[in-house]
Image (tube, rainbow, N blue to C red; front, side):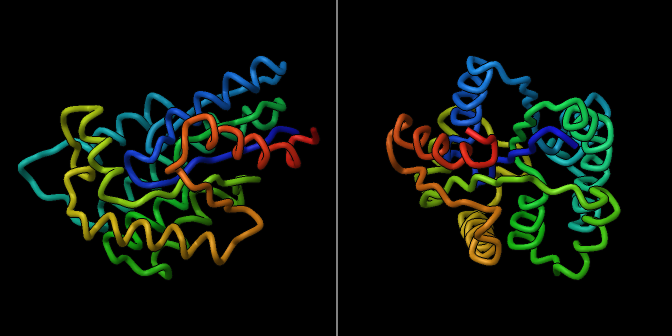
Length: 208
């Protein structure tokens, strides 16, 4: 594949969407073919699965069902959007990917990695980002920003502070285990400072 796959990770409210949009604008202005997408979702079918995962319902969703829906959506997304874009040489910027599953369903829900790992191989068939930008900030203020922005919460955003602390801890642990791919960026700085740090990180993988 001749394209480049870059993902953004972090808990709610750390500024992923803002920074992803700023990077998209910069890359487009530099003449790159850029595809922006998100998980869960990214294609019409995967977006339907996203709705199943995130919408609040009276019937509880077992953790195992949530996990498998995440990977079903990821399989569709990877095969129908991400791979074709990379094969034509595009830069794919994705708001969350598999690191989020290890953080949310693994760290947050407590599902063991040994149960997640086989689904990773099945859904992705070896496709991993060239670079993952982990925007990191204290959980409490980040969640408050997220709630203030939307005015409502989905099924996962409604989880406890302790849940999101576990998510953040797992993200940081994954970054420590894969420092070559996952780069931690302090999201507490100004929007401009965070964007400048991200620009520095992407230059080597884009060859400029």
